[in-house]
Length: 321
Image 1: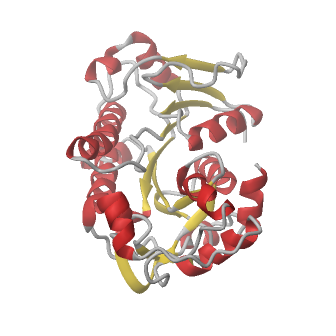
Image 2 (image 1 turned 90 degrees about the horizontal axis):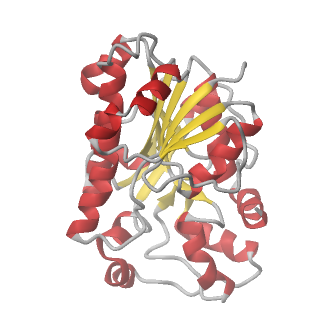
């Protein structure tokens, strides 16, 4: 593929910090939109620029430089969103939902109903979502992109609103913009997310199963997620929901054993479900106690290749990165 011009929103998180350097290595030209300024101050490249604007504010989309960047973009990637891993107070829930819904809605509307500047729309719009589009608890089911959807729980409602905001009245597809909803599972990286939070306890030999341990975890290593984003951008056949997970979901008990082996410590100290709910509230109940076995059918059938498709290999790689 020839190098293309990309507009990226929300790249200050651990996924964006891995994705941007990788895209630059591939020869792409990138404009970042970030309300915090350039999250890559040490990454010098003439193909990287940053607009310090808040994509959740309507006025930002009237800014001349953002209008220009959008009009020149071959593809758009939307990673914007307040971190999930925090105690869900009423205010935090509002931030988590609005940070995804507002920026995504404004972006999608500017793609679907453009100013005169956007005569030639981007070819592809990739927006993050989550496997919670299938709900929170689906025990005994294997979930694919064609499975029934659910807005069970707070995360189910967030994922539903996120995807709905990305496709206002189907207008984006009416303009010929290929739209992909990347439904991510647990992203494994020592630099962030759930794995970073779990490592201190497991390295101290205090890890173990959580709750019954039977609940299924659908996961993907960060490097494979970044590769899947690039694959989805480049492959014109990829469209609609895309389960961004590894091929083999595991039970939480098996995950704990595998992580214990990866850090060479026993993982035999269980954490009861009530303790998780006491410590983390609803956030813990909907994340570490969720039960979703998600299959990446579209990616597998479309020819995507995972570099670390099994959990032990993925954990070893994540801990070395």
